[in-house]
Image (cartoon, rainbow, N blue to C red; front, side, top):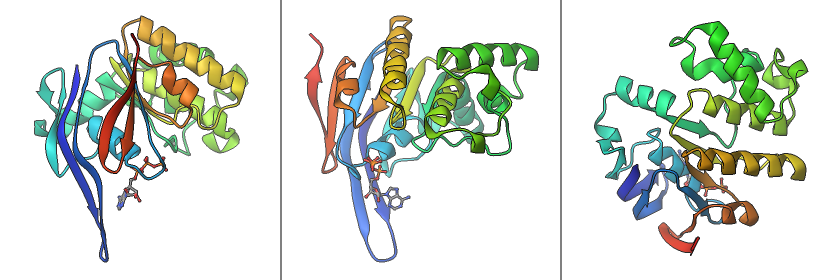
Length: 225
Ligand SMILES: Nc1ncnc2c1ncn2[C@@H]1O[C@H](COP(=O)(O)OP(=O)(O)OP(=O)(O)O)[C@@H](O)[C@H]1O
């Protein structure tokens, strides 16, 4: 369902260049949960951004259901991301002047009837453990963990086939982290494909496959039998 082939990425600054990804290939089957671990700065976020169509690699290809993501035009790629790929950013990227509910419906804001979207958003917020009294609050009034869970609800609003998450439990306490792991497990059971980066090795182990990114290379370090 998702395939990255021979990805290279170098960041060039005025005084130096950083080779982050060197000939990375990965194939992710439908319904698979793939975890990526690696030290800080090893390129995990860069790889997720490239995989989800947010950042063009220097070379290499990304396929989503056999469509070459970087051969789509901007509008097509934006539609693919909004409707088929849910993305949870490490820094959440909630819009500051929109309420929790409006942030959650954002990916489909102009596509669907608002009341229906709000109903779905409320259900999702309940699933991720956000209480009703927070629904009309602006993000500045939320804790880090609450923002993270709102970002997860937003990533799910379009019922995407793939959920790509950058440190989805980084700001959560033990109880909420366990709740998110349970949610991801049940999403996987429903057939969703999950790709996540985490420093939480126990969470990584809940996946079918665990890859480690190190020195620009990726290696499979654990696979469910
Ligand atoms: N836009 C950019 N311009 C220049 N260098 C960048 C850019 N984005 C990332 N980098 C560099 O690329 C490397 C990989 O960054 P990336 O954020 O992908 O790592 P990471 O493994 O996700 O790190 P962390 O676990 O700390 O979030 C780092 O050295 C970072 O400084």
